[in-house]
Image (cartoon, rainbow, N blue to C red):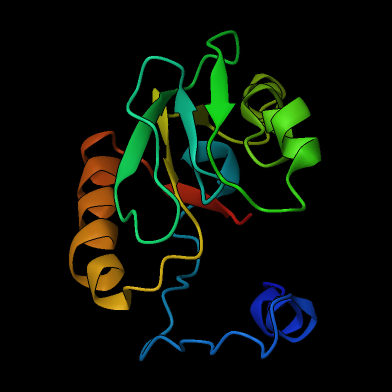
Length: 155
């Protein structure tokens, strides 16, 4: 069961009054189709992580995404400007655990790691852009890589 952290965040976040939460009309969770040790897994984070040579994310309404190499040796930078982001800026693995995912594959916990992962800028207010453009595009790209399970890592 996922932690419903958005109401907690909205209640405790500045500025006041708290942000209005958007509730999706349908839940996107699906049961696992196969055992985890047979699945190809990819990460999707909302921390606005990118390769240093990729176009920077812009704060606010940036509904784009970046494809990130699965190789943890490839350097990344964090564009998200959250006030709680000091740890993420020191170590992106906090919200983008590429090395840990590879270790799970090596131990046979998951079947394999996808060749790439994805990052978006969290806190996008344009919900239509997310549901009509961003989410379907990410789903197509994940399907093209034959990803069975996308781990959504919020920021």
